[in-house]
Image (tube, rainbow, N blue to C red; front, side, top):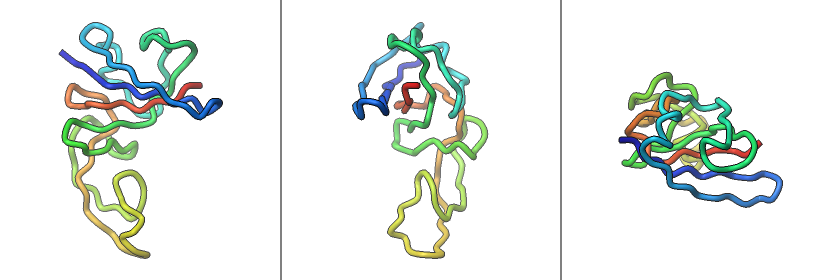
Length: 113
């Protein structure tokens, strides 16, 4: 069964809260993508929540431009999973996770709306 650590950031207060959801409570999140909005009652918080990212158990980040729930090597110049200290004009092929939440995802990052 699926279990996730959900980190919900509140931009108004500047604070975040971490929740652990498992089994039946985690089922509605499977198949959702980065950018989708979720009713907060599914997670036990008030209002709506937007999914902004996450990572899998090995620490590979989710990217919104990689479709599906697969791991894939992507040629990057900037963005999620690419360090800024690589230098100007540098490209690197990095392993990232797709934008869909699957059983392999460990942490889901979200933003309270």
